Amino acid sequence: MPSTGPNIAPEKLARLGRLSIELPSWGFADTGTRFGKFLQDAAALTLEDKLDDAAQVHKLTGACPSVAIHVLWDLADGDARALMSAAQSRGLRIGSINPNIFQDQCYKHGSIANEDASVRRRAIDHMLASVEVGRAVGSTALAPWIADGTNYPGQGSIARRKRWIGEALREVHDAMPASMQLLVEYKPFEPAFYHTDVADWGMAYVFAKHAGARAKVLVDTGHHLLGQNIEHIVSFLADEGMLGGFHFNDRHYADDDLTMGSIDPYRTFRIMLAICEAERALGRDLPIEFMVDQSHNMKPKVEAMVQTVMTAQELFAKALLVDLDALDAARGRNDIVAAEECLRGAFATDVRAALAAWRGARGLPRDPLAAHRESGYEARAAAARLPRKRASGGSYA
Ligand code: PSV
Ligand code: MN
Image (cartoon, rainbow, N blue to C red):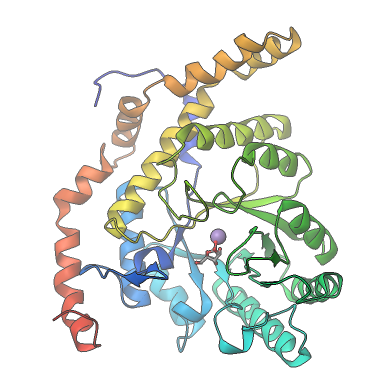
């Protein structure tokens, strides 16, 4: 790591300090692909383990005070208040509540777009129950992912399904407390491979508008067809006041769930720049949720999250370094090369030493990843969790 770096203006470092990155509980558990799961000794088994892991990431980075939960995976038989105090006792709070309307057998042919009214009702009731979890824990966001779609031409009435989804989201929206936002996530394909009911940002926008004033669009960076210009979507939604938040991750092919910025850091930087430009236009921070949605199948989970947060901070710092006045002046002169150089210059700046000093000044480890490795956390977690995994029948011979 270089010993010197650029001077980052105090107001830019202050903005960086306000970048809170929400961690997904599911990013700490064993996950895999549809071909199999390779288990990790230190992966979390219980919600408490996941909160411990998230607390470790927050302790090292100071940037992750909230944890997103997936209701069925985290709260099968738990109670919401216990969840809140479990988070609080670790210096965390519960962030977005993710209902699960894609996993149960009854959803084979869809949830809120199912032809069967009783299944639609069940899915809506689960979302309403999730709203109540959110209310109990003081969450500010309900983030349902609507996986509904069809696999073959002719299988479903796309228009009828659209109306059912619209009605369901409006009912859920109206049940939410005033402090809560409904974040509508889109995804072009998977698990359905012919059509997906909420396939892109335009559909999510229409559903959000229809649902009510507190509904916004959630941009999962892995949920776009190849070649899609994501920063364009981000700028457009932010300017419309309809950007609710992100699920950050990176991808090479489809929804690969790779570490943010690992494949195309320049794209992530451009998304960050779109945020910085929107904030300048607004005159304040965008009121959006910065969430990570990554399942680390191969990397150690806590390490991967620490690396993610450091990457997010580095790319956001680089975006903050773009001289927006110079950029606008170049645009005004139609000086394409000078405009692009504003981006390239900032992106090429190595901010790691400056961020190390910034962390140090805030009482945090200068290198959170190294500090994590030195802490022995992973070995302790494995020692504590492995016997429980063996006892629960995990494939640990
Ligand atoms: C679906 O691919 C998704 O991005 C949704 O946000 C889910 O809630 C999440 O992944 C969980 O796997
Ligand atoms: Mn997502």
